[in-house]
Length: 614
Image (tube, rainbow, N blue to C red):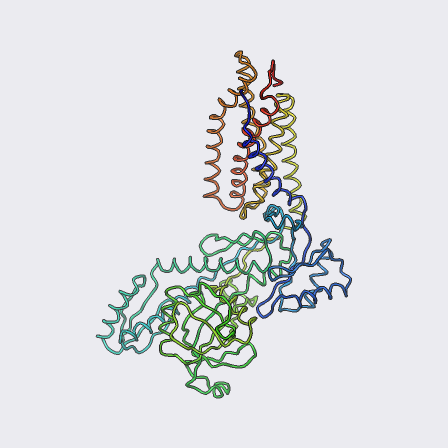
């Protein structure tokens, strides 16, 4: 008999709708004002810190909803924003600079929903509030760093090739190599040109060979500097507990950072502005450190304090920089002693191998370098950065090292974890500065949400009333499908990890509400035509759905392709609009065709009908 739905389709429809409704449920629970505590560079978050935080809050009679400890961070949930501000200030005073204390908004999703992966939709900056930074990368420092690497590479390569030189030094935008005779210069030029095809070499007077970066290499250095900084900034943003941060490139040397839900702008700026790198250098054992401490530092060496403030005499020559590290993990050796296992890229592995082959049994230092903005600017208007260096580890080289090696001599597992974290975070290629800052308050974000919801509700109400009046009983079926469509959109948006709802995204939902009934209008009008042509109600329903399907599919495919192009070439708000539009098109096809037919078949299928309320 016509218009009978198989049992498996019943089960499939119910399961799909039920799953979407389940994952849409977390959006009903809202968010808590929260204060998050995470570890700084020389601290650790553990159960003892949790007890300390709870005691501090109890002593000050802070009204707390609950305190949670997970993922190496503590989250204090509070009842209102005023208590949140007081709590943040209290914990900052109590914990000091070793911990990052930041205000945030935390989803109040029940634990049973979280266990199955349920979480509310991620809201963009325009809806949730937060901060927007535009950061500029200091490209001059990036190019200087590339030239410094060239100096080290040239020295190593010429030494291995047996080509003697007087000096290799960096001068402004190029590297100068001075030789002893014309024959050596010619041999070195031929050797270096074949080895470095992305460099431009020119001979000068006085047996000097100059090497400059080609235009293509300069572009690559700049692009790599921006991409590397984006990766490190993402790692730093994780300290703030931002659910869906936006960190993306803008132009040639700028990075956009959007932190939805962050209310502590000062702390966000402090974390993002810090610029760090790592260097591996040999400890200078040929000179007396006491002479260096008295002011007689050898020309090729440098005094740098370790974390305990004890000076260490190191060679100025950098064996390896942290940008070659691709992975670092803490662990223990066969004797249970803490260590850090390091993995390098191929170029870094070659450098480490060449640098350690003649230094077995000698100590090597890991130097942490941080650049902090002083607040002053130079003549070009750029921020002036202050360079701080610190020796975080000195270990003895036991064997020739390559792409994988380990750092030993660590005092505790905590020190090993901290060092691994620093190494994994990588090295910013160049300092960055914040050139633009905008703050979207939670009240403005809530206003956007309210206005967007009003638009959705008014649009939905208008469509529901029209369908109910014009198509009667079938209008009720279309309205049920339309409401189901909204639930499915919210559910799918909540399930997709990278999907973020923005204000343009809400516009996409409004558009989807109007488009969702297009399919039902086509189907219902086709059923009316079949009835006017004298077909029976059951035949009219069957032919109405079958005949309209190809038209509906064509219309939605063309719209989906347009939305896909918007997603591919667009950025920010345009992507948000296209994502909700694509999701809405898929769910509306499902609800308008499958769900409505499921309902119509359940109500009218298998019955003898004389007429239809359509």
